[in-house]
Image (cartoon, rainbow, N blue to C red; front, side, top):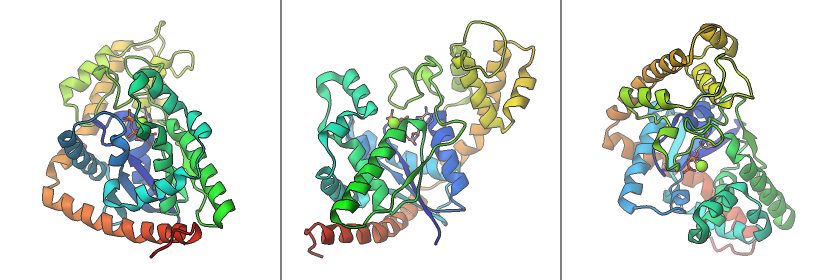
Length: 327
Ligand code: ATP
Ligand code: MG
């Protein structure tokens, strides 16, 4: 049987190169080989403060981006999380399988608590359980994500193992698919932290929808390391990050990239990187603008129906096995 992948991104802001290189790029590559479900996880997005009208707009923007980067709705299922109510229903059941102590160990949760102090919603705490439900509902084999999601994937497997043990074999155990390159693109302003949609500093991220001027400015301002040599080196995280972006965007090998920049200066690296990025983004941006509202509605309606078909079967089994079954 064809194996299945599931993945998603939050409509919390604007998609950046980290999201693309760490996740979306691999979704596109894997969709021909796997039965694919790509979700816009708007229920995850409301765990942070938000404005409803903006959320609704960003949700559609993100769906457009999925399509524009190459997700093919003829072969992949693209849908919005809140359209498939099984996600929240399974979350409740898994909430009663998950332990407070294991959720307290999640580093993403701890980071958010550190930043937001007393304003942390219960939703942020519960985020990994909702994510586990997303994945397990589709009996997913593989979850292509960036490196920051590794711990959440381990929790997903732990919850599935515990549920299967206590209630009978129900969920397939999913594996994370974390790419060798691009799994952790760093902020351009601070190479010590990952590029993030929710980062307050707009210069840290290059957005997929940034215009040419903005892309140039952001790369120009990017922090660099001391020294002058341009090569991959763990001790020089800022330059390595810029080189990694260049390597992935131009599809040149790391060795070719180093040869290209041998003897050249940081200004040239930034200029070439900006130019390559602008060229890379142009067709994506054109496709985003070409997708009509009607087209998008049709794709999302189809996606919702297909997702529901699969999700409802899993949820029925869960309800049967837990004594909740009424349908
Ligand atoms: P937020 O700050 O709101 O959490 P985000 O930038 O982390 O936003 P998500 O929607 O949470 O984006 O993640 C979507 C996908 O992008 C996930 O698979 C995640 O692992 C991946 N991803 C996020 N940031 C990076 C990054 N800097 N490098 C590589 N992959 C990333
Ligand atoms: Mg994130």
